[in-house]
Image (cartoon, rainbow, N blue to C red; front, side, top):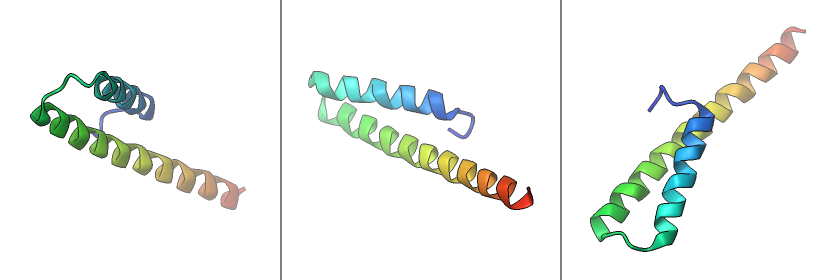
Length: 62
C-alpha cells in the first residue's frame, strides 16, 4: 500500500464507496472492502501528516 499516491488511494476509496452504495455485495465482500477502506484511510492520514511535517520544516528553515 505504501506505493500508492494519495490521489490513487482516494480514487480507490471512492470506488469502494460506490461499490458499497450499490448494496449487492455479500457479507464477505463487504468485510473485505471495509478492511481495505480502513487501510486506505490510514495511508491517506499518514501521507497528510508527513506532508504537514514537511511544510512545517520548510517554514522553520526559511
